[in-house]
Length: 254
Image (cartoon, rainbow, N blue to C red; front, side):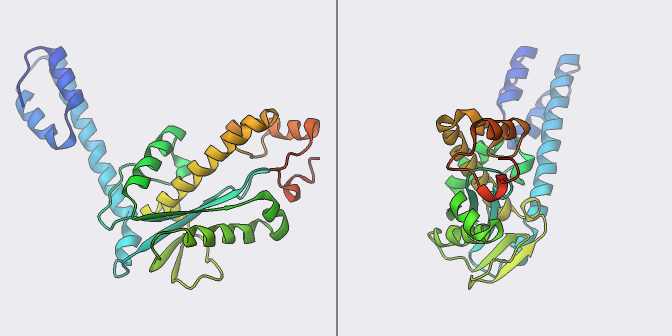
């Protein structure tokens, strides 16, 4: 690493180094007593501390994957869209490599839309297999949301290119599945596999609702994603339901 003379140059260098170079950077400039340089070092140290804390968090999120490591293909399962007035319920199934560390992966509800999109791309690139299951509002009305959720999960599993050896599920046991299952309460915040499934399902459904917004702009689906916001309820009273509304969910509003 080349030593810079100006604070501007040092700041630019600090912004471009990766985590593995941080200690070398600190050793290079630690004796520079200029206040500007010391502030840059403090910022770099803060970045290093954040990274190390993230590694510790990820280590904890691998706890279930490590516990069941005797199974070759560990699959995380999660769903999104159980509560909205409109749109499908979507399930994700993800099998990650055993050595897969994806920084900042978490329960999709705890992430910004931009971070979810970023992590979605990384998950799709690095996963051994990804499966999706989508169940329509019409089927939700016919068999109820719980059974529709189970069906979405079964479809997601079937759409995997590799059959899982064990399933890590977010808080449910899926009927009619001949694969060992582990139900984990708040699993999307405790298991990297379930978190990955949560993100894939969330991004997929959100993209679908953005497309529906182009067809039914009165309902603002791009923003509310079909949930029963005040504006959504007002639109229902004014315009009536669309073909993607769940009639069993909106009967008290129409």
